[in-house]
Image (tube, rainbow, N blue to C red; front, top):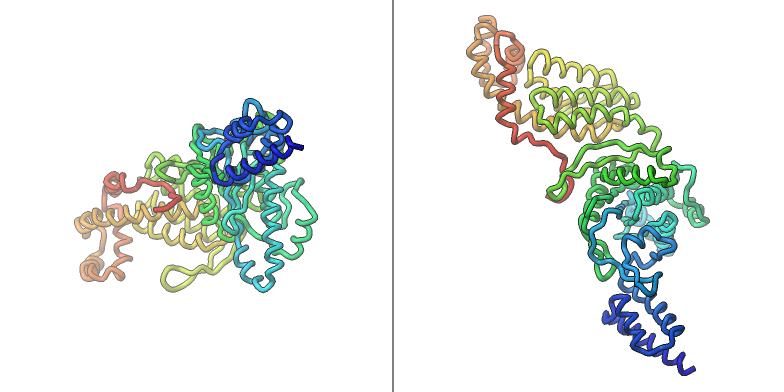
Length: 495
């Protein structure tokens, strides 16, 4: 009895020191137990119970991990104690190569809660259900999952296959749609799926980087580059598809998955998911290659755009603005409109007016621009038509948003080149005015130079006239002068 009372007092004293922050590591906890002079049996019991409280107070979302159920995460995040093999200290600052972080955002959940605010008991039940389900799904795949700031979800895993499978299970639950043969199911999921509407999710996943620093605070919270990158990729997914589910992940995650599959990892991911290379985004001074996880059958068409997009990205990387970037963009847009579902829509134009467009009409527009730019060397009209066509495509719901994004950025830079080109071209047109125009046209040209709207038709004729020589040389000269200003990269993050 005396030994039990002594052990109880030691444990209470240990609890007080843990709560006060005087014991902040497992090593300190073991030292405290050893200094009490307890028998080994009682000492081990005190250490075990003290360790549970220590984890709850200082490990945060990682308090659930243990070497049996979270083997990979345990190996990456915990320094095991030499005497107590199933216990240890959480690494607080580390350089890692096998940690993956996912940030998921549930679209519309806040609005749903606001609309359901009169039923507070049901909202509390839903909130508890969401938090519990996320943790259970994550644990099923060897991940740690945590509800963050209302409708945000944080996942941490030691393998790419685990974080992807956990992400897809969460997506399936909230979308109320099955994409994989296997899916997390429980009585709670079945019950709540009857009253919840489907929710879309945007997700960003980072990880697999060699020698990436990561910090776990004294409260068990993550900070560092990987977390920030996952948040930026999630924001990018939300930007590209604000009303649909989309997963954007660092290319290193895909590479990690490929290595794990080659090493024998068992999963049905390859049968369902394809990866669409989206190029790179700039983040904190770094270029981050990223890919989209394509899992819906109706979006498989994107894989047919991959070669055209990669050709464009190569041209951008090599600064081939004189002609290749334009022609490659037109080809990518042509492939997109050829592969997306058929449409027939009324599209609003900048300013006033609208136009009815379908797949064939967009293809005709792109062919016209290619002819204006590559054959007639009418760069000004081609760029104006490109700008208008990108605007039209941005309003076509089925048009690939990444292609629209590249189209906008490229058109913006070509507009800058077009303005400078016009300054170079006008003196050449004036010099050859008599060869370009009839006598009456020349008089009109002179008269209307101050009235640019009326002059556009005549200027277009002049730009296309073979009488003005060396247009290609003038165009190339303009692009050379603007080379540094045309540097191209997509940016994600705070300006």
